Amino acid sequence: MDSWWNKAAVTHVLVALFGMGSWVSVNSLWVELPVVVSVLPEGWDLPAYLSVLIAFGNLGPVAMTLIHHFAPGRLNERLAIHIIQCLAVVASAFLAIFWSQVVSVSGKMHSVPYLLLAFVLALVCCTSNVTFLPYMYRFPPQFIRTFFVGQGLSALFPCVVALGQGVGKLECLNSTLGNGTLEPHNLKEKFPAQNFFWFLFVMLVISGHSFLALTLRVTAEPVKTEGGDPDTYSNKEEIDERDKLQNGATPVSEDQVEVVHPTSAESFWTPRNIYLLLLLGVSNALSNGVLPSVQSFSCLPYGTVTFHLSVVFGNIANPLACFVAMFVLCRSNAGLGAMAAIGGVFATYLLVLAALSPCPPLLGTTVGIVLVVMSWVIFTGMFSYLKVVIGSLLHEAGHAALLWCGVFIQAGSLIGALSVFPLVSIYHVFQRAKDCVDNCG
Image 1 (cartoon, rainbow, N blue to C red):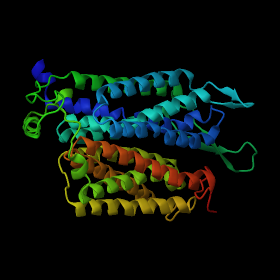
Image 2 (cartoon, rainbow, N blue to C red):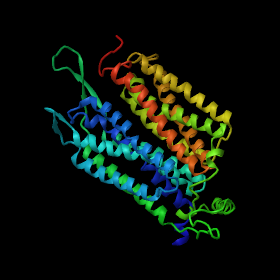
Image 3 (cartoon, one colour):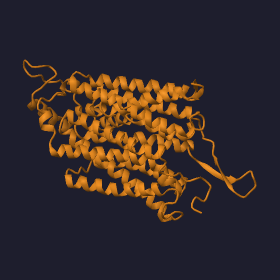
Image 4 (cartoon, rainbow, N blue to C red):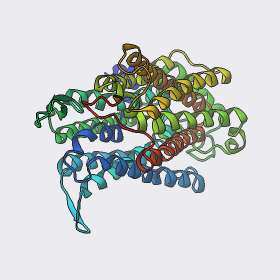
């Protein structure tokens, strides 16, 4: 039993499930929006509310970063992660029960329970980037790539369930006015939003138990330096221990991790690491902030099937690219820059399609549909691979490097979302295609 439990494959599975819980909450809230907007009083203003709540969720990463800065080594990361995961599980359970409840605020009905619980889940997800990632320093570098595979699954699983639910499906029926026009009619979902949120609860419980299992796994006894702090070890011992880890693929215990590196502040901020962090921030600004905000504008003019294909295959490309990075790791600055440039070209094409909505080029052609779906797949795959590679390279730079990795991921995502939000919700630069109507006639 012990030999089976301590196999590297089991660790990979547990790490992936642990990583899945990092952003599964926010991803689930987004994919279930077409269902909840038909019930809640905010209607299609709800995405704007959700964007603002996710932005405020960055208070969590700010607090964690300040703690690391002013009280280095004082934060118990394992305890912090347990608290974060318990908070997410409780919030998701309350969401499943109370999501449709409304409250009168200043004479208007608002979905206060849904918004409050959405904020809690956003706070948890945002904070996970600066707690989950640094914790992964306890594992050999290959496991950081497994962690990002799990993050990709956090987008794929809710998407697959939502598609099985029938989210966003509609049919065009003859108008009741008898004038020969067509009217869109949304098809009834196969199961209600409450069931979907209970599925979210189950995924979070699985992620929490996976992390608990990781902390309980058998580890080697720490070898302490004579007369030294029991939580701090010499560089030689740490290197020797990590060499053993590379062979045995076994995580180290809490006490074996040197969280505070006295010389890391000077040695970490090298031109290469700054380049990697900036590349990481820009890629996440595009992949987590800008492009998701305009995905419907770039795809829906080509039809709902095109939109669903882009979402599904894009979410498949994410964990697949992370899986490829487990075997092929590009260490060249020029190579990483080239991949970012390629991803940027497809991102630009998708932005142009969104800006030209509802009449983008090649509308009504198979070529147009293939191009938009392939662009989403290549764009998502390139930047997902880039994120994993940079995370792996920063893992080699130490615990503080993974903290900054999480900070730049979150900062890039926030800047990207805030930059595109006024264009979408205030100035209405992008125009939606109307269903069952010839928008370009």
